[in-house]
Image 1 (cartoon, one colour):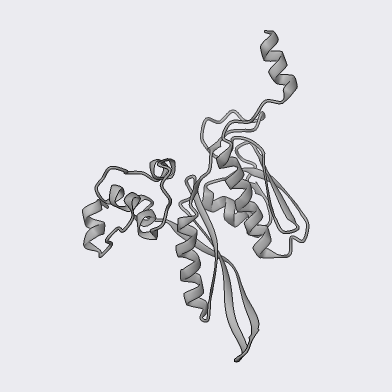
Image 2: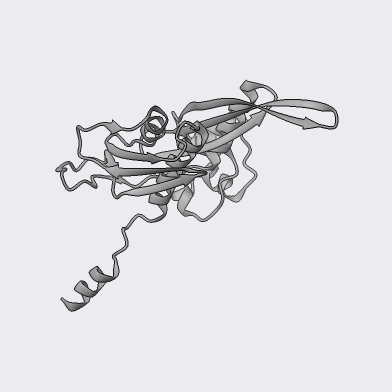
Amino acid sequence: MSANDYNDGGWQPVTRLGRMVQEGEIEDMETALNSGLPLKEPELVDQLLPGLEDEVLDINMVQRMTDSGRRVKFRCVVAVGNRDGFIGYAEGRDDQVGSAIQKAIGIAKLNMIKVPRGSGSWEDRSDRPHSLTRRTTGKAGSVEVEVIPAPEGLGLAASDTVRAVLELAGIENAWTKSHGNTRTTVNLAKATFNALENASQSRQPRRNVGEEREVADQ
């Protein structure tokens, strides 16, 4: 889909990044994320990542007392991804389930990240990007999730919620460890996304002090 085709569908970008995408100055999602400009338009993501998939991970009813009485809203937890290195996560609340889901999907697109994929396991000989490049950990509330690179063919050793997030990100093989109140789906999903987010923010593993000294001595 070209920028002109998308514009014919009614999208009129209002941000600098949106205009750069529409005018063809930015043609892929990684360039958009590296531009330093904030993602504020879901339509921008739709254009750069056609075929984006979404999955509702949890729906919960939230009640709140106000001066006018009890108010009920629905909280939806959603992940969106292209199964090829890009994923977003968000929670949305609304009076109706459908509206809460759509709101969460829109926010998740604005939280899109690029996950560094590769073959980070010493047991692996594959050159295909099927796992993470390094071990990573994420946390949400009392829940902590660790994702460890695994060789091709292992699959995902993970719970259903963690598996769903990893699959949308394009991670096919990994070991995972979860700690805390893992029955809380929202925190488990958020911790998994946070682990991928931490991996994306530190693409190169840092050397420890001992390793730095060994390099200096060589």
